[in-house]
Image 1 (spheres, rainbow, N blue to C red):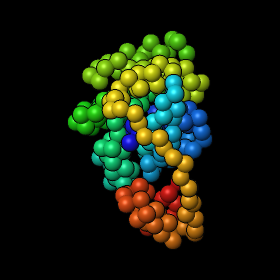
Image 2: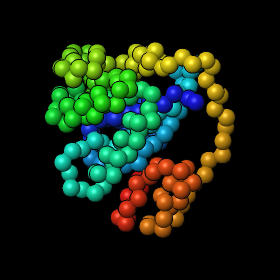
Image 3: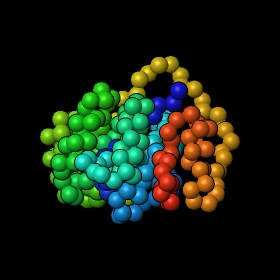
Length: 211
């Protein structure tokens, strides 16, 4: 099976921008609105001749009564469980927060390799501020900019070094892609979940749940 890397972090740290940067696509919607990303979004990355899968997740929150945020957290937990390596994205501009510490606690319990990605280090001076994230106890933070791409090469080199070497990876064959379309609340996400055999999409009675 192809190695899977999950992007995890609190809301608005630039997870979707990093997903788009690494997959060289515009698959993920990028806004300043918390909760824009809800379902797990998968893409493909090729670096130094090696392919791996990447999954974007919504922002992890705690102590929320919002049913949507609770469902997003469930999607994050699924991604953490299925990942081989986790990219823990933090915001070097805003610094370390209590919510970052909460995410770090979740990831430590996973037992998976975790890479702290100090995003929004758009210039060299700001990058030095990433040292604050050493206190998370998850190793050296990688200062990067999802916007201009700086630091992402070193990050990808490190990710490849964390993959387990178990012989030649299987070649991913080209497979058909299908779109499920319809009006709001027609049951599209339920159909997708049934077809893939897992909770890939959040299902609620709220129109506009899937983005």
